[in-house]
Structure formats: C-alpha cells, structure tokens
Length: 212
Image 1: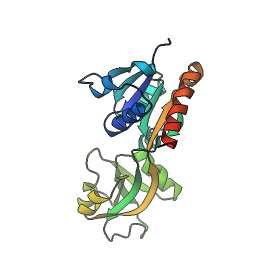
Image 2 (image 1 turned 60 degrees about the horizontal axis):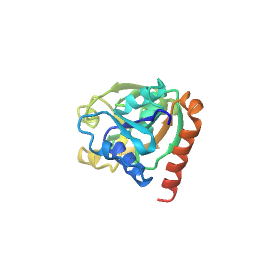
Image 3 (image 1 turned 90 degrees about the horizontal axis):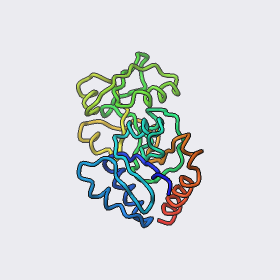
C-alpha cells in the first residue's frame, strides 16, 4: 500500500464537518475524534493521514507539498492567493464577506479617502480596486467591529454569518462582497504523482455531497 495521503484540515468547525463527511463515506475516524493533543492522526481504512492546522497553515502545507490535500475556507484562499488547485466546494462553513459601517453612515458619499479596518487586507484591497476606489486599509487581528465605533475606520470588511454581532454593535451591511464555504484544495505535484488516489477520494466526496 502507498504511504497515506496526507490531508490538512482547518481546526475547529471545518475539521468537525470534514470528519463527519468522512464518516458518511464509512471511514473510521476514531483517532481524529479522540485526538487528545495529537496533531497528525491516521484514518487507516482510507489510507489517509489527517494534519490539524490553522487555516493559513493549511494553505502553506499544501502549497509546499508536505500535505497532498487540504480543507480550508474560501476566505483564506482569497486572502492568501497560493499556488494549488481548488477542486471542490464542500458546501459547509457557509458565510459571506461584507462591507459594513455604522448604521446610517453614507459610505459612498464624499471624495475623501475612506479607511477600512479588516483581518483580510488583500480581499478588501481587491474589492475596492474593482470599484476604482482608493482606500486606506488598517489590519486588525481581533474584533473588527470595534474600529468604526472607535472612529479608527469608516467601515470594515469582514466575514458575516448571521449579522447579529454587527447589529449588536450598531453596524449594518452596506454591500456583500462574495460567498464563502469550505473548499478542498490539492498540491500541484501531488495531483500528478497520486492522481488516481486523489481523484478517487474527490469523486467519493462529491457523490456523498450530491446525495446528501
């Protein structure tokens, strides 16, 4: 048997949803469910090895070929622009990128350069470039919603699921930028060297999603 296909999963909800998907395929994911502090875990009956990582690292591991495949949100893919193949929309982890401001603020009026706070500077930059707008971008690591409240920014670009956090902080969505969900990505060399195994796994996952 070949060495296991190594697949990096984004820790947290995407990890849980992917494991549930693998279990629907009939794979024994006990080792992943009972992982303790381990970060590399076998799914022996599928000849898979799961690596648990933060979203940005999933892309780094797949891009550098230490993992053959990965499951990561489209938000991270859009922000990082790595060299890999995006093969499949897994249909879970759904949310949207949005531009939001303080309620009632007329964002698009006036001629001054607007300031945008975000965890996703590349996504924000691309969005405003597509509108031909000059903006100043401030990168925030924590709660982006604070920036307009503290008058650090005119608006924010962030991920919105229900919009509750925005409402509770007196903010509202001005415009949706794009939809996001979990994607299956594949290393550019692995797809050539292990084409059949990867294609088989993707085919099984695709059929499982379509029949769900």
